[in-house]
Length: 214
Image 1: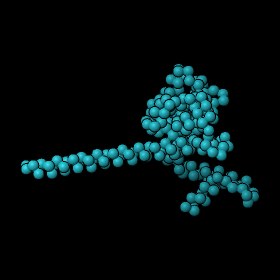
Image 2 (image 1 turned 90 degrees about the horizontal axis):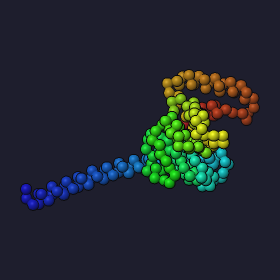
Image 3 (image 1 turned 180 degrees about the horizontal axis):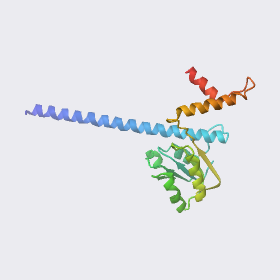
């Protein structure tokens, strides 16, 4: 090759490498943005639940749970853990086999247990941990397991009388849509029998009307 040909080939290789690096960087950046967005959405969900419970006009103050110990079940990507830290807890045990957002895992007071809550309960009990707060946003096949895990923690001494808890109950319909619809229709029908005034409504009826409007 001539010197000019070699230079051109080298320049093309550098340009190609740069393009690939930029594509990889863009993909990594997009993934980080998505993870951060998910963390923010989760943070706001718990923040709103706490704000409504305590009937606050603005965000929950950082002194609300000062020096308390919290357990966050199904913590990834870490929005609820961050919210608990923002509310003043001294230690937030984030229980989830999945990774936390780096900003959360690096936060002071965040302790990530990369395992399920079932395996974490005896380990936390063995460490002498007693939770002042128990929050869970886990997506479970059986919604009733949310309560079962809380009761298991109580029986193990991990939670106690006065422990504040927040549970998300996610009703997965799955393959039982027909049964779900039949039961829901019956409940709405039976409830409507009690609707004897024009100011009475039901959640089921309201939800159905909203879907039809869409």
